[in-house]
Image 1 (cartoon, one colour):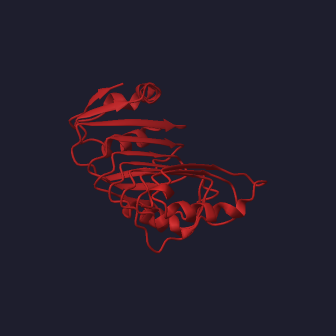
Image 2 (spheres, one colour):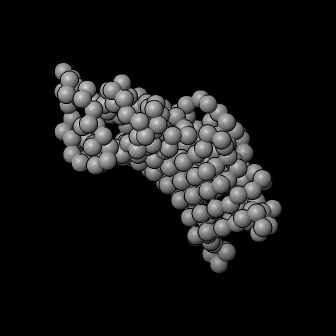
Image 3 (cartoon, helix red, strand yellow):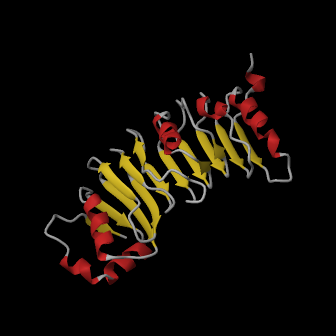
Length: 228
């Protein structure tokens, strides 16, 4: 039996002074040892190895500061949680392939800077299993996720998400960390989520919403039941 060589969980922390060139060998090694939980935090110039895109046993992946190479092929059949923070990524198609190549993905976080994400196109988030999405202002997503239950995002002056398929979820928990509210922005957000039956809005978001006088004239459409 090769059970002795299995590695279930691994957390790696590196900085510039700790031999960044070893990161590829670490990831290559664990990707063949039935790793399930991989948490890597590093800042460096080396690309993350391609082996991370085809790890057949990975369930939970967290990458912080990683430089993602362009992906030709992604197969992560067991991945349920993907957390990408402060990553360097030159093409949005790589992020799209990470999502589409994870057929059981339920929880997606992408926290990214406009200084390290060079593709200005919206990311297509298509998943029949995705339930939770957390993004920041550095990225724009188009969401096709019928099972979505929770959406968290920061915005400055523009909406950074568009929902094209939401289905009719019983509840959507939404936390809009907005830096600047405008009537058009609020109306656009509410139109996007108009099919939700129960809407849970975080308290800070709701306080800003009720301040806006334009909310009083909202709308002839049937409104969701709002809780906060």
